[in-house]
Amino acid sequence: MGGLIPLGDASRPPTRFAVVTTLIIVLNSWMFLQELTYGNRFVWVWSAVPYRIVHGHAWITILTSMFMHASWMHIIGNMIYLWAFGREIENAMGPIRFAFFYLTGGVIAMSAQILGDPFSRIPTLGASGAIAAVMGAFLITFPRDRIRTLVFFIIFFRITLIPAALLIGFWFLMQVLNVGVVTQARTGGVAYLAHIGGFLFGVITARFFVDRSRIAYRWG
Image (tube, rainbow, N blue to C red; front, top):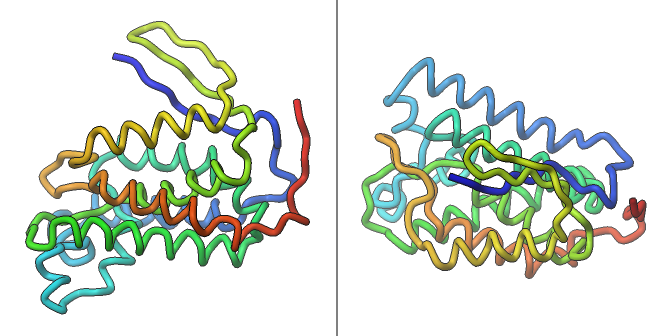
C-alpha cells in the first residue's frame, strides 16, 4: 500500500498567518466532535441527502455537510490537504475572498454530486469538494511550485519535492478515472463528482479571486 501526502509549498512559504484556513480546520474539527457525540441522528440532520434536497427540503445541508466527515481518516486526510494548499491560496486571495471562494467551491461541489445522483438517499458529507476547488486554484496560480510530499510504500517512505502541476494533475486524473464514492461508511461519503465539480470551479474562477499584488515569490 502506498500513496502521496502533500505537506506544503516548498517554493513559497506563506508570508501571512492563514487565519481563514485555520478557522476552517477548527470548524471541521468541532463538527466532527459533534458527530462523535450525537451520532447518526446528527449526521442525518446536517448532511446532504440528494433525494431530500431535490424535493425542496434541507437546502442548508448543502453548506453544513461540507464541514462534516465520515471517519477519523477522512477528516485527517482532508485537513492535511487543506493545510498544504489552502494557506498559499488564502495569501494570494486575501482572507475575505478566500472564505467566499472556499464556501462557493464547496456548494458547487456538493451540487455537482446531488445532480449526478439526485435520487440517492445516502447522506453525503465532507470538505473534499471545497478543498478540490482550492487545489484547482493552486494549479492555476502556482503550477511550477514544488510541493514537499511524503511518498510512502508499505513501510518505506521519504519526503521529496514534486511540481504542483504534476502532483495535482495526477490527483485530478485519479478522480476522473475513479468516478464513484470517495469514502464508504455507514453514513455515506463525498463522491468523486464533487471532487471534479469543485476542482473545475477552482480552475475556472481562480484568476478572478487571486490578487497578484499579494503573491510573494520565495523560491527555495
